[in-house]
Image 1 (cartoon, rainbow, N blue to C red):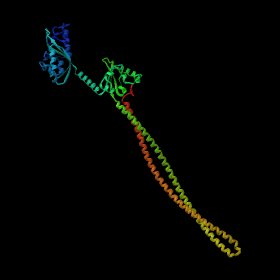
Image 2 (tube, rainbow, N blue to C red; image 1 turned 180 degrees about the vertical axis):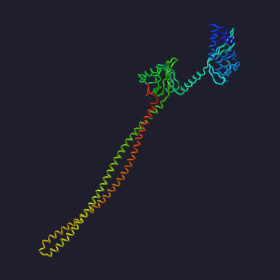
Image 3 (tube, one colour; image 1 turned 90 degrees about the horizontal axis):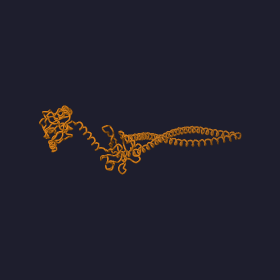
Length: 462
């Protein structure tokens, strides 16, 4: 079959070896139609065996951004960057094609605008009837978007491998491979885990559990699982991983392996556990202090109440002692009156005695009575003086007692004022202690929430 320049089409139409063309089956129209279909679907360019451009179709020109007249008689190297043209490999590439050898692959080229373009292409030597290569036809497809997409995916995977621990399993949990981060986290070498089951990282109790069997059943069904997991490293060392188990699907949507991406959070979990313990101890102390503050506040209130009652009693005592003093004074006045009566009685008795003496014998009996009256008046006067002296002494003592009670009252008032101030201070301390207690509860709840937020509880996870 011949192209538009009447040359045989090479590899694409299965034209054979360097010296003899294999027979082509089908009509000329059929083969011409196939060639036209290739030109519609692919970018096509023709070169001389040394790489000089002979012709290109519209697809190729659109891909590279040139017109046909801009590239004809130019060398293929115009589509390469300078670094590529300097390579000996590029010269060997054209030497190979010049010898009639076929080449295919992915090639990076440069458009007229200087942009990189990736082509999936085949370079097909075309032979004359004697088997001598006379030209090279390149059939190409622009795969730039796919290459960039794959490069992006590959870059992301490389970044993940640098940053995270990665391990791959088949669907039953057998280990296929692991990166250095995972090996470093667990302490194993790859040869020590490859081909073993995932359960080697679990305790015997966990690996024998129904939850663990269901865990791998879920993954085998294509379900994504994530969480924070307690695992066992080499030598029985406990480790904690924040991880996701990701089923990988084939082209038909069937899972065929599981990739686990993990971060070693052992230090974080240990620090969090230690922090929880310390906060628990601190919370207990704060709670105890709050209890003491409540009791002290109650004692302060009781003392304040007792002092207030004491003040009332002292006040009543002062009032009573003042009343007693007043009564004593009244008694003193009455005693004074009695003294006056006794004095007057004594005078009257003396007068009666004088009159009785004047009366002689007839007044003798009356004189005896007058003497008795005088004697009683004298004793009454003496008793009144004694009573008056006692009342005076009592008044002095009552006054001294009243002053002391008033002093006690003043002291009690001072004590009451101080106890009230202590009560206010204790109330503030109690309020602060209760706020501390409430704050510690919120901190502890926040830490628990932080712990829970790191992942769901899964088999082998705390």
